[in-house]
Image 1 (cartoon, rainbow, N blue to C red):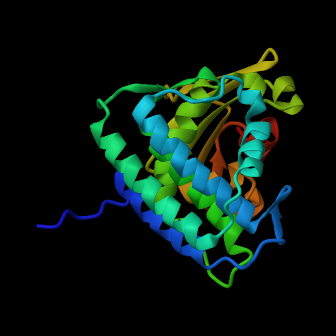
Image 2: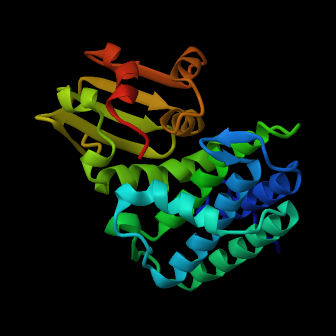
Length: 269
């Protein structure tokens, strides 16, 4: 009997978004349309391809090739610059092949283990799936801009990205990497809940922030967010006000006005 697809299962989510991304890449027109920083559509598709191949390798080795996370931008740009392939069909096939290798390597890996991610950060193995889903969903939004095709960020898949990657990353990442000047000046506490994905607590004060699991203790501001809206707001693909007006992000508590200020306290990790 065929296994039922579970949209919030990490393996199923990676399989589905990889197939969607490969299909989207095949539909891309020629390069020249700048859509993300200095990258055109085919350069961004190349980056996505490399992310899948990097994840497949990391699932097997458990060791990332970059020790300095502050150099991530230069590293990814250099990788794309060194890659000569720009044929959408070839890139799509490489994404599909890497997704299959990733699935096989994840199945063979000891369950419950950790990996040494970028910058030497120790993350659970499951974060690899969350990262792949996150990158695919977000760059699908970017690539869809240059095609006539729609790209919906499904909340069930975004839940995997937030639960398995974003929340664990924020709890292990050095605050200097994502804290803004406004965040360093803040003194406030938040509970940030992604619906269905659990919650984390953020305590700002003394020029830093402590991030950990929600304890249920009182905070200044509670935020409840649809995972798809949260993912896109955090990574700059959606205005937080659009999410607020649509009820996809809601704040309450003794200082609910702090809710819209949280985004300004942190930059994209």
